[in-house]
Image: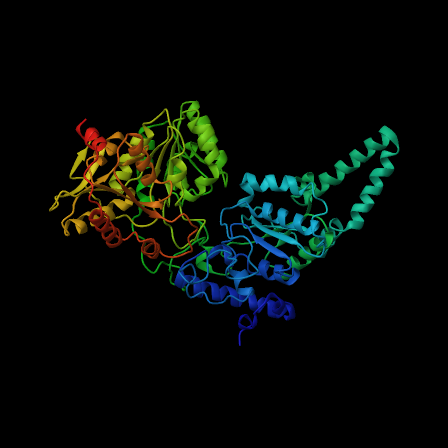
Length: 639
């Protein structure tokens, strides 16, 4: 039997010899490659934290000690060591989440996959432990070097530094290969010395003795302390953290279990906040990942495990269209500046960066800074295009509202993966944007239904220089282009179906859901209900053309892939009410809830957003209506 098969709880790790731990690490990597190649997922990050996670679970007593993984995509090894080995349905409905999940295990704490939050979580847990007198428990935050670019991490560090009695260990998983690991007995001795309370007591005794000597003594202490700090800064990059008042251990080879355990035990024994700096290699032990210059197999679809090549080639998607079009726009306009938050390739800005490096800014995991930076650029004459995943715009709402919109800045925000993303679960679904952005005065939001509209509406967006514009589109492959058959003012008309009676239904498709809207109209027309399908193109604010067209109908149906509460349907209902139009609006969107990981198709079905579901409800609503149009509707329709 393999060693991995014998691991049911972290306690099982503590019975293994050093040699067996090495074998276990090899088995874990083989398991990850075999499993993730069949399901897709975050392969490279997990291959890089095998030994580090083994050491964490041998030193700390989870769940008594709380391990908090920042972002959480590197928690697959943690899942294996806490008894979760069924990876057959990883990131699929009914299977394991791709992130920590409290519903799966008591060993999991934070399900939020937005970066730079772990230090704040750990600070709160450690504070609660201290207030409850639980001095034998530790909070451990595992955070990547990338997540340390987020301002929230530094806000937390600033507060942690003031809590010297917190039993809190911060493990910096540095896979950027910025520093070579310090190894050997002398390094371990120095680390033990720096994290010993006795060492701190000696330093404090020396400080007090020299300060009693008056100004000469204080001057001597400052000089000696400066020399000490300068020498240490040359030997290891710890000055920044120790200037904050947090002990630093490292750098440590994150693939050396013994070295990691030694560092973690010293940090655990210190009794206050300690940073352990571990150097790891993303994709370690899997040649295709190690040879992948772009991102070391950060996230993969289904691949051939022997070669790392995809099982099926990826189709040309929404992101690729944006990537092409923004480069063309950049060639024509020298004022275009592209901004992203540590997502240069995923959001499609890599080609722009290659051609226009001086006009590309990657701010790191700092969406707030990205939006206010954009406001400054716009003020000075540039037109910034900020490309983000839709879910991450949530983090910069205040900056969009108060720095961009309040100042009527000509900033274009491009939201990739808007709506349903599915397999990455609750905190990656980009379903909140329509409801959130509806509350921003002056903001205009476009939702293209296909690739041609994405190109056209991106160009329209960057022409606006006195207000923020937003362009949103989903994850995945492009649908076929859906050409308009006519127009109603600013609205694209996609289908018209005369009915057998007087019933008329306006079906409004928001973005990619316009394709569903056309299917709905076809289905209800087959049952004798007349319908017209429109794509508003610019869905926020609600246009007067849409209000006027809605006033002529018996029923309005809005189909969107954001939350239905507060979304486009709600906005249209409010606009009709404000105009004195009494026409019912049926809004079909996502429930106001956190969605478990599942495929897009499964989520569509669960929320009754399939064409057949909406058509059935629409026909029932028409049948239930017997009242003729009100006078207010007739009056507006005649104007």
